[in-house]
Length: 439
Image 1 (cartoon, one colour):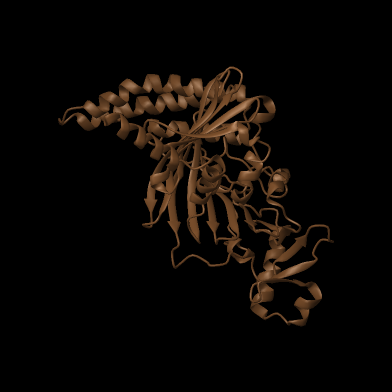
Image 2: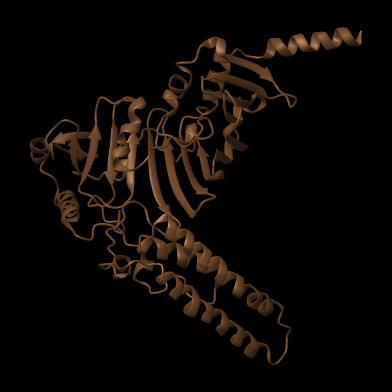
């Protein structure tokens, strides 16, 4: 009787498994379980002591992508390529076209005849356009949108090379053999068929190439979404880990725009629009009709004095030599560290020193070694300050020890970092005053 029940349960379990094609569709559908969304997320890696901040918005048809900042307030070089006059690049991706607005610029770019599979071609702007819905599905952050994920990933795979099974934890395991690479997705059908793990291996040796672990959380009562994703790449130098954390995830809120337009990425009334394959300055954005007007059409509308002033101000920004946002710390000799005795802030100083002097990878490694050595010498002093007992002499003793920590910073850390610089790197950078144009 027990054997019969076991065989029956096995048959039921097998019948409940979807086929490979259905498993893929359900997994992709789990990332579409909403009409609107607003996602803010960060990326950090084990070999880069910096955090990058990103944002996506969705309306069910179009989506936006913005890299908002990094740890040091640096975004992207402005259109003239200046590394410190930084401006956000804001993308709006729709089924028909892609829009790009570089913050503070008078003109926006628009590409027609859009196909999601060609998102990668916008790499000429040194910026990957990442659809957060694909995070954890693909082996890395890639310029691909969810609509193209199935075709781009499984389109060339023979159906005989795909299979579906169930592991000991009850998770559905989708396997696919891509030739030199094989991949697996672990899918939790109890959480709307959301993926919780992926693996990519070398088919010949079965060596692990990369893996992603996803922790899921229920947002707004109906959407299972990763709270964080840990992606590990296995290379010759050792594992390299990238951590993605969703610091905010909102779904189907009344405050969300039901239809995303260029206005949602900061394109203002009468912003100049440059269109693919057409002469520069071919049109201007009309936020009231949500359309692109030709310049003659715009003039026929007789823009109000206020609208025209805003448009002309944008044009002025385009010619302004300081049209980017210069982080305030760049005009500070201590790079915003504040107090040299704050050992925890020394890493910030070193990282910003590397940015402003454009250190190469070898120099950055040396800078990290110098930082570690100085921290090693300061560590016992910091510990002694924390353990200093209460007495009438405590303030004096803390002051003496604090001065010793500051001395390590000024007499060891700073000069040793400067000794790494080449002559061109040691020349003071030209840094105009910070410009704040507003949004």
